[in-house]
Image (cartoon, rainbow over all chains, first blue to last red; front, side):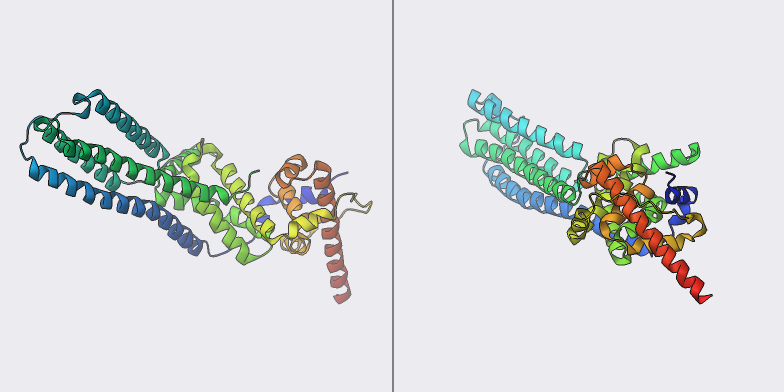
Length: 175
Length: 188
């Protein structure tokens, strides 16, 4: 049997988009919400990075004050096989998490990346300290702490990205 | 879509994926009317339609980086909008109930109407008056281009139940339009 209703709609389909609304106002609401969720990620990541960076710089300042002879650096793996293993572990973890965050294209902005680079810079200074104090436990501990801090920042950013994505997925029905 | 429009469209999607809010706004302007009309027909209420539409676009632009191919944006946004409508309807919990009273409904052997003589507005008003379950099936089939098999998958019902719901919806619309005809004739 012919479906006259379907035929009638198909022949004038565009006419059925009859309803109208204040689309500009709706865009304002949408844009406001999109900006809010973007800043949630940036704000959280920025705050975590900034707080941890302060701690890192304080510990670095303390160590620099004690060992202020600046020269070529020494990496952890050059001290002992155990430290080489530790350094390898942390550097792998940091690289892996950084690549996930970059691939997610989640709006983690340059400010956060700059903070991470500042931690890298602090690490380079620690390496220099270590050259003249190769057996100094405080310097080694600070270098490991530096890796942990960086890892901590990255993990928190990842957690926030996952939660954000989860919230979005929860609002959908799978069809 | 013409090739020039396609290029602009592709560019807008790419820019939107990079977080360009202006490009997102341009895409929004291209699709908002059609998407709002989906929401309005399915929800049967202006305020709810607005809320659902806004949520759908927020989801879409938050997730646009996951969109694999630019050319599928129109299908992609429509799917998100339909999903949001279905979610909102499920929250109302009316659709499920309405779906249950269907199963063996066969199309009545009655004369079909010439719907083309009715103004679009009258047909839409009639659709607004039918129950949620019927309306959802009818909207997906009539306006959004899904067939009964797809509608069955979307709503978790059988293909024949979808057909039955559609027939029921059509019958109700026919009655509503006929009653209005009679009322008009009496007034004349």
